Length: 297
Image 1 (cartoon, rainbow, N blue to C red):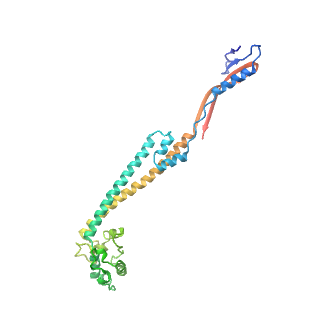
Image 2: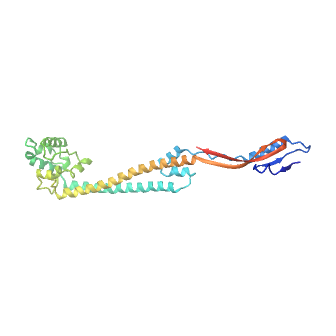
Image 3: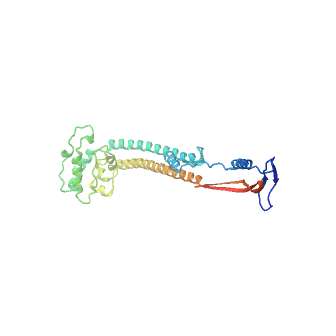
């Protein structure tokens, strides 16, 4: 038979004790061993959850901000995952919108330039004032405008010769000639004609434009209108560019935060209190309080 022997040893010890004996009056070793094994198996603490990978979390968020935060939370949505994902969507909307608006404004100011600025008019202005711009310059109109019957002004020009003419005039110090005009439709073509007074003579309302106006930035109204139009488009491109930089930053920050969150979750402390059976002499089993602490790094 099996019978509990006494509730505990002396009061100072917080244990439970049982006496196990066989029917013949002696302790049954096999039975005690089986009982202890069963108790220990029941009291063993469960295994810790598997660790998550900080690198995996970082890669998830690098690909899609907020995804690594969801991975860290067992694929559940958290305010962090929603915040990073929401920022991503908002930033892309801002970027796409401002690129669209900037492209539309660019198309408008290029149309305005083609309608109001003429490279052949610019060449005629140079030839008219070249003796004042550089007394040693001897270029003629026919040397630069080589296809006078072409439909578009920019197709009538020998651009290499135009740049050679500009280079020669620029050798005279202090006349304001600082740039060489690239062929249309290069981006620099549209930028230079509305940025530098050197090209003021090519506008269709610049009949009174003289070399002295280059140095004083005294340009025609159409030049100023075009400058503002181009500036407005550039401002929108700048906003879109800033949004693209913030998009990259959002990816980086989300990746770093996801890796940190997983690393922090991996470094947890698990504590478990239990009564462990200890075999004593004479057939006694004592249940001794035990605290199991595990630090997961």
